[in-house]
Length: 158
Image 1 (cartoon, rainbow, N blue to C red):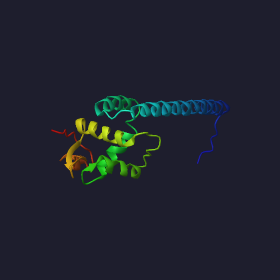
Image 2: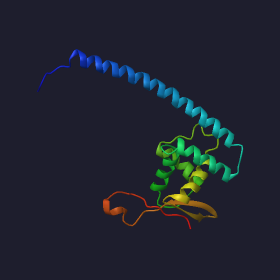
Image 3: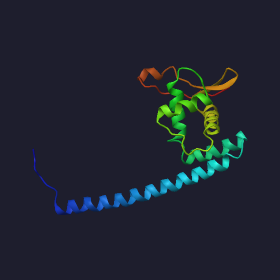
Image 4: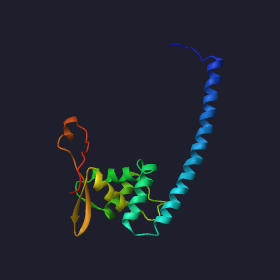
């Protein structure tokens, strides 16, 4: 085993990089906090309408900016883990199982419903009727199992 130590120049470089990382981490935290506030403001205003077309348009825009790694992916995870179609209410109930928190969302039910409709229009989600209510299910492509990975194929509602 080698006992080579860092030079003073290397140590100074590491210290400089760590200091810069700390500054950036602080700025990142401040930016994320501001983004959360803006999202809450947007969601609060959107809670004033029940027009699904209007909600969908704004949530799509919001989703392109901030949601893909969050709410939408949590809903995808819920659908992928289910062997049966789920209503929007059932998806909402199961979101906690993914580790996703609905805290801070002024109207999570409307958002779940809107995201499900959007997914059914353009992703591997099909829409069916379950006890008179729309329900959604993730579709598995026939060749998904060839690679041993549960990869889903696009299946659009007809």
